[in-house]
Amino acid sequence: MFKIIANREVGPGIFQLVLNYDQLPQNPEPGHFFNIKVSQDGSEDPLLRRPFSIFDFDAAEKKIEFVYRVIGKGTKILSNLENGTELDVLGPLGTPFSLNKSGGSIHLIGGGMGIAPLYYLAKKLKSSRQTLYLGAANKAELEFFEEKFKGLGVECHLAAMEEKLEIRGSALVLWLNYLEKNTPDYIYTCGPEKMLAAVEKEALKHNIGGELSVEKRMGCGIGVCLSCSCESRDQDQKNKRACVEGPVFGLGEVILSV
Amino acid sequence: MFKGEVDSLKQKLTEADLNLSVVMKSQQHQQQNNLKLKNPLITASGTCGNGKELADFFDINQLGAFTTKGITVKPQAGNKTPRIAETAAGIINSIGLENPGVDSFIKDILPETKNYSLPILANISGYSKEDFITLAEKLEKREEITGIEVNLSCPNIKGGGMIFGTDPEKVYQITKKVREIYSGYLIVKLTPNITDITETALAAENAGADAVSMINTLSAMKIDIDQQKPLLANTFGGLSGPAVRPVAVRMVYQSFKKLNIPILGLGGVRSGSDVIEFMLAGAAAVGIGTVNMIDPTAGPRIIGEIKEYMLKHQIKNLSSIIGAAH
Image (tube, rainbow over all chains, first blue to last red; front, side, top):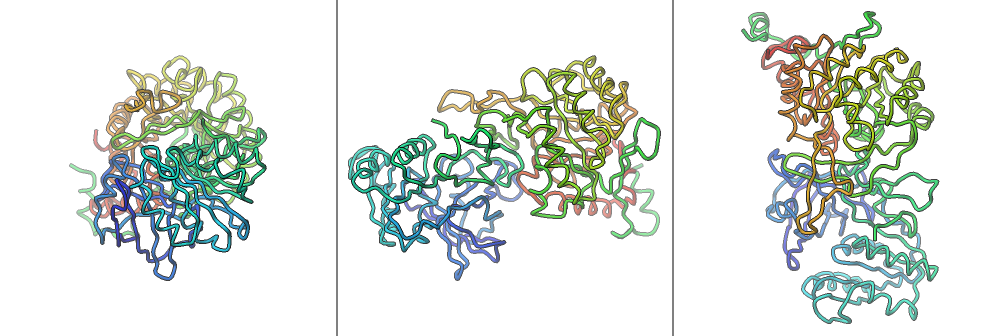
C-alpha cells in the first residue's frame, strides 16, 4: 500500500509527490521508475498507469519521492490528489543507473523534468566530484532543484530559455561551455530525446562514457506490450524496451530520435 | 427463467462446488483434440509477452491458457515510435508485430514455456498465404504448444494481416491451407473492421477452424493537436480497452447462433463481470488483453470475481451460461 503524505507545488506546474509505503519488492536504485495508477475509484480514464522516475528514497522513513510536471489529464488528476489518498503503485521497475563510476569527476546534465532521476543519483554518488548542468524554461522552474542539489554539495550551473541565468539557452549549450575546460570522467543525462542525442554525440566525440535515461511513451511498464521499444545501435542486437532494459542506457546503446 | 435459478432451488453452493472449466470443442471430432481449459481466461496475444513478464507477478498456471506474442516468418523490428496513444477508456497501439521470427521463437521462447502446465497457444501472422503455410509447418507437432491462433486481423502491418481478414474468401483459403498442415487446435482471429463479422467467422468454420477469436483491435487514430500531426508514427493503430467492449460483445452475440464452433471472445475485459457478459453473449472462452498492461495480476483477480458471480447466482457450472443471453 502506498499513501500520499505530500503532494505540493514546488514550481510553476511542478509537483513534489511523497509516498509512504508498507513494503517494496526491493529497494529502488537511482534510475528505477514506478508506474502509478492516477485514475481513482475504478475510473477507466485515463486507462494506463503513469511512469515516474524516482526522485528520492528513504528506506528508514519508508518514503518515496517523485517530482512531476502537470502536462495532461493524468498528471492533472494526480496533482489534485490529497494527503492520505492511497495509490496503486507498481515498482521499482526498469534498469537503474550503474553507480560504479563513483569517485571520479561526474557531470549531470538535465533538461526540464529530466532532472527528476538525477537527484537520487547525485545523492548516491556523494563521493564523486559532481557538477550539474540544468536547463528549463525559466528561473522559477529551477529554484526547487537548485536548492536540493546545492544541499548535496553539487556545483550547479543553470540555464533558462526565457530569461538569462548563467546563459539564456539550453542545458546542452551551457554544458558545452564547460566541456572542453572541465572534461568529466563520466556523465549522466536525462531530458528530451533531442537533447539526449546531442549530449551523447558530444560525449562520444570527446571519448567520455556515460548513461542516459530516456523518456519514452510507455504502455505497460513491465515489458509485455513493446510500445517503448528503442532500436539498438548495434544492428545484431534486438530492440530494447525502455521499461525493462531501460530507461537507463549506456551512451551509444540505442538510437535516439532527433 | 434464468439458468441459475434452477440450481438455487437446491442446496446452496459453496466455492468448493464451483466448476469453472470449459471445453472448446474441436471440429476434428476427436476428444483429444478439444481444448480443455480450467477456466475461460486466455491471455490475448501481445499483451502478456511470452509468460515470464507476468510470471513475476503471479502463477500464470492459474489461467485457462496463454497466447504468445504474434510471430512472423522473419524477425520484425516493428513500427517506429510513438507506438501507443491513449484515448478515453482505451489505447491505440501500432506496435507492428515486433517479434524475433518463428525460428527464434522455436529455439528461444518455446523452451521457456515448458515451465508452465497450462495450454500454450502460438499466435501467427503473415504477409501472404505462403507465410501462413510456413508457420503452420514449423509449428506442427511442436509439443510445447496446444494450438495456434491465426491472426488474420492485424491492423498494423502493411500488405497482410487485416487485408486477409476482411475478405471471407481469403479467410477460407488461408484457414483451409493451415488446417491441412496443422493438426493441433486451430483458432482464427478475426477483425472487427468489417461490415458483417459473421461472414468471415463462417468462412473460418467452413474451412475447418476449431474456433474463432473476436475481436482484434478497431482501426483508429489520434491527432496531436499541438503538433497538428498524427500522434502515432504509423498514423493508424488499433483501438483496444474498455471502449471497444460493447462492440466485441455485440459481434460475439451476433455470431453465436450462426456458428457451430466455439468463440473466444475478447475486447476490453477488465473484470469478472465483463467475462460473464461475453459468455452470456456466447463466448466459450474469454481473452484478457489490455487489462494486463494496467494490472499485471488481473487474471487471478478476475477469476475471483467470476466465482463471486457464480456464488451470487448459484451457478455450479460456468459453461452453463455460454450463450444464455439469447
